[in-house]
Amino acid sequence: MSHTLDPVIAGALKRNEAGLVAAVVQDATTGEVLMQAWMNDEALARTLATREATYWSRSRSELWIKGATSGHTQHVRSVQLDCDADTVLLRVDQVGGACHTGDRTCFDARVLLGEEA
Image 1 (cartoon, helix red, strand yellow):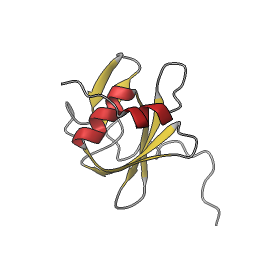
Image 2: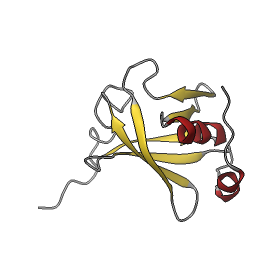
Image 3: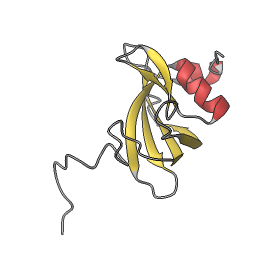
Image 4: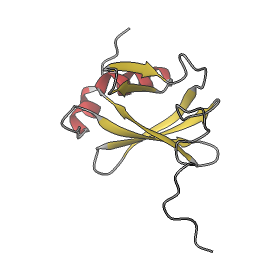
């Protein structure tokens, strides 16, 4: 089923040259940043309509619902647009790992600058 983005939201978005906006995904309970993905208008519209995190796969050129094949789902509690209207923040209830590697978060492997003591 195709979903259409509300024209007011669609008019506010600032998309990149590929027609996408960045989506930052945060655990709604802990505040931990889980992942970053991309959304086109249909992915955002479907996410808003169903509360199932839906993204645009740049490598496969298709929509993907987080957890549809892995079972590692994201129930979306809230969606916010940043001040520049080029990034959305999804606050989710994560089931299983958020990273495609199976890790809880995509941001736990490569620390470039650690916490200051």
